[in-house]
Image (tube, rainbow, N blue to C red; front, side, top):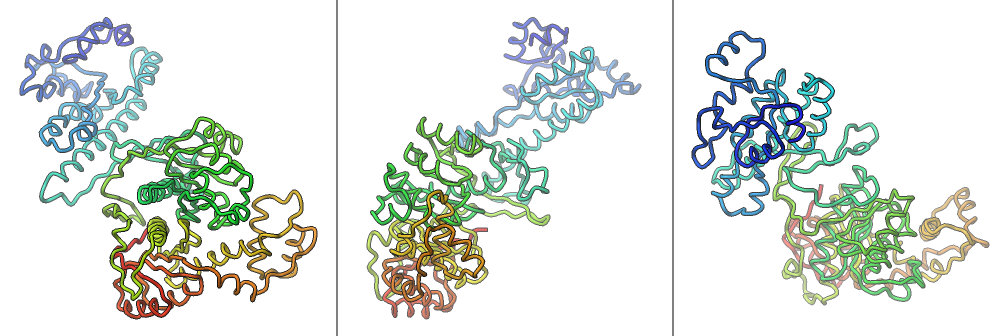
Length: 578
């Protein structure tokens, strides 16, 4: 206001805005006084008048336009400032009040914006307070005027705003009718540019808010990248649902948009404390959840993105401090824990604060190869109700088995399909993601289960490393020791981790130790088309199975479960994720 007054700008305005500008010393003329027409229809019509829109649309230097303006008493308007009615906020406040929402659809504002933007050769259109400093700088540097390039930039921003505004109205209106329109409108507003997309050559890239909604998290520290953010939003949804379903703190360790591990916060056994290398460290329920999620597959979790369902405490932060990890998303952080995390990686560790009240829109939209796709969000709840249809001879599902089945279902719900996951004692112990064949998922995840189990073998747990061998190098060395397929060159390098070469872990020793694995659950995102998956799972202590069912081979699969003494629940819920 003070800037306009100092530059002797003659202002047309209405209502409270006019009164406020007069307080700043502006020369203000009420629109009704200028047009000779009062506001009517409860304020629905204020600026919809030829003297307003003629001033916005008149082409300077056009003789016919000049004659029309003189005849009808129209003055040229050079600068337009419009703030639209907050439609999204109105819908959020009273979503079920149709009349209230309708009254909050701005008509005059978008009309003036579009007219001003069309006539950008002569008119500057300001649609956001964020633009005020640039406009003042532009006018100050150009004798109170604006340049063409500047006005075009403003016009482009204006059309983007009206497009977004109309999209919000259109989407809401489509929910209020019996025949929704075939055209769907979605608006993306860049909230922060990203360094690049999936790969460095994929530029430009950005993180966008959708349809005027706020982001579901706040960036506290670090600079998240495209894949970091995909990991974060998927991991957050997983732990949010797992925490709600179990009533316990939940954690996930994500890599490339699939979980390497996921778990709930239950106490670690003495053996787990040793194998997971957390002896002597304070362990809270939240820290337990992350230690277990990280140790499902610590090789794959190298450089992970972490999600925690509840507040991150100091114990958890200190565990993360020693791990190689890219970032974390959680709803809150203890002050000391936050400082620990913000200092990690020289301040480059990514810390995102999730909004645990945020509810994603019902509909999801994406583009691929020039095509648009839409679907309802997968908001199905995976809980004990999904486990009521037990189809095997063995029907008893202990509470721990139910907990493991729920953990498995929720984990694979956010795993790239085809996917299968093994779980035990509230943690994933093997996740097989993104395979074209289901039995390959079973075998891939099963290999991870074997590795997890064999890390507890006395020979593996008792490996004597040289002083100075890094934590992740110890993890990798144990895995290669278990796998045991090193050639001469690799073996020579591997042995350098130890003062003396360890005795090999024989196949017979592995087989004997794996035979002690029991009470494992396997969850599948779609039906098992053949019994081969069950046959393989039986070798890894599987006693409980959860899958949608619906295959022509269901009876064959049920028969296999019965033969191995397994209990299987059909969920009637496919969980593909792409």
